[in-house]
Amino acid sequence: MSNFYTDDPDLVRQLETLDLRRIVALREDDYARARDFAYAPGDYDDALDSYRRTLEIVGDIAGEFVAPRAEDVDRAGATLTAGEVCYAPGMSESLERLAQADLMGITLPRRFGGLNFPITVSVMIVEMISRADPALMNVFGLQDIAETVNRFASDEIRQAYLPRFASGEVTGSMALTEPEAGSDLQNVQLKAALGADGVWRLSGVKRFITNGCGQVSLVLARSEEGTTDARGLSMFLYERDEHMTIRRLEDKLGIHGSPTCELQFDDAPALLVGERRRGLTTYVMSLMNGARIAIAAQAQGIAEASYRAASKYADERVQFGGPIRNLTAVAAMLADMKVALEASRALLYETAMIVDCKEGLERRVEQLQSGERAAGAADELKELRAELKKYTRLAALFTPLAKACATEMANRVAYDSLQIHGGSGYMRDFAIERHSRDARITNIYEGTTQLQVVAAIGGVLSGTLAARLDEYEAGDLSATPELLGHVRAARERWAAAIAHVRAADSTEFRDFHSRRLVEMAIDLACALLLLRSAQGDARKLLVAQYFVEQMSARVEGAVQAIVTSSSASIDALQALGRD
Image (cartoon, rainbow, N blue to C red; front, top):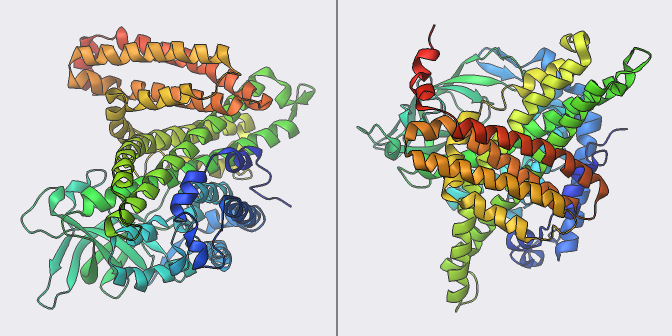
């Protein structure tokens, strides 16, 4: 028997040691929801028990039901017949099992049939499903679509669609990308025209749409005729009918069970979500931030599966008179993989908590502004707005940091796991071949790592991250004074590199070194989070020691690359990249 929650002590530790009290109180409106729903928690311990029980249920489904079907799902893939997509049998069975367990509306409010769980807990669920089968996560994990509808659509639309999402009656897709508008979404050309009958109709093509066969899609379209920028884009909800054709399924390297579709819209009727002109600047940005956390969790799950495959093989494969785990080179690879996994997980769940705080504060501010809570709350509203401003900045910074960290880590871990398997890992007899293919997309979709760097560099250079690191250092790290000293020394070197980039006063110079600065930022954040977890935990102390030693060397190397680089190297970039 395999339970993907109880068999992962580090994942269990996240729930048991993260302080979710404020987050849960905000989400449960100080536990007032218990008056309206019999299954709503009455206090924090009650909520924690509910999360724990649900995670164990998901762990059992992932380990006992989903994972055994993953290989067949990969081999069968999704198929397109007469314009209709058919999931692999194992995919359909797993979706049905998850719907039966009431897991299709994890973060949705209870009045729509959801669980009203925090994002932090939903990320744990996504990680376990991804460890079992990341293709399933690409359908199951698209719950951010329903969450976007919940946050921005009219109450009429919410009432009509959210119960159907929560029950599993419908699945969704984000129809954003077009042939000429990949990462450059402000260049979207699919048109939305408002007819004389008051109905919006969509016309154009979308490409690379994950689960584009879903019954309900959020579609980014150009609603303002004559515009060419983001201000002309709006968001629409479209329910599949005869006005949309699935033209093809992409033949992909990995995640075969998840259909990636090209869609043709021909005067397809749709509903406006929220306000016109805010499609990209508000709604897609919110949707993408949620999707990026989900992809980080997907990468985390793939990396966990890859590491476990390598560890098992290293125990079983005998060479030179013993298991290859006994070879120092192999032991070092396994240690690197495991420590990287735990460092990335620390950053992932710190990010999830930051986003939870931001969204909880947004809801509380909206309640106060609308008068849903007691009058005379002007002082509270002022404090909450200031706190919300802080967490909005942090969420905008940590989300790309977590996505870049987890997805790059997953690719390294999958690569090294295959290397440990040797020639056998290159064969389809072993799951690592599939994990390696599946990992590759994670640092590409929902924004490549290069775009995550662009999204994060402002917060790195502005001091937003430094202020957060100061908060971590101000916590109780008394059990690790020597390691803290090493981290502080690395921070000083990082600060010197930032100062050097600023002094250059060159956009090209900044862009050239942005990835180095961001990777150092990730390293430093992970180091302090690991130190925090190492207080009173002997095993975590070993992890922190190993990580800080490696981190210090990486930071020093990156700083040297920055402070010693010349303008000649940057001037030569275009020439060096040509044949």
